[in-house]
Length: 142
Image (cartoon, rainbow, N blue to C red; front, side, top):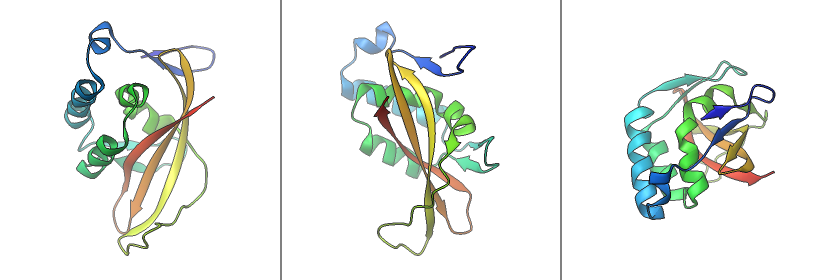
């Protein structure tokens, strides 16, 4: 990851090793990175003061929803994004009205991935009587 001094926007690129992998194999590699380096940890979002944990639920959702190579490698800097992303101040209700889910929140972080600038949206769930949990990410082209 490279952070430019002026804008402090992280930059990540696929490695030469990553480029040789199929998308399935790339996802398998980064799933292991997610499990080994992030799962079970909590990260303090600097703007809100919320602790956001990374659980096996978040790993499952990430696997389910990550189909593009850019989205897959974005997970390299999950800790940076959870700590530095900006909260959009909207509470999103659970569309299935599950009693155990208080709400969802979206956090935003600009990132350069493979030379393209994205707004990474981190979806975070707030279960009742538990800390916030990373749910998954999506990418918007900028």
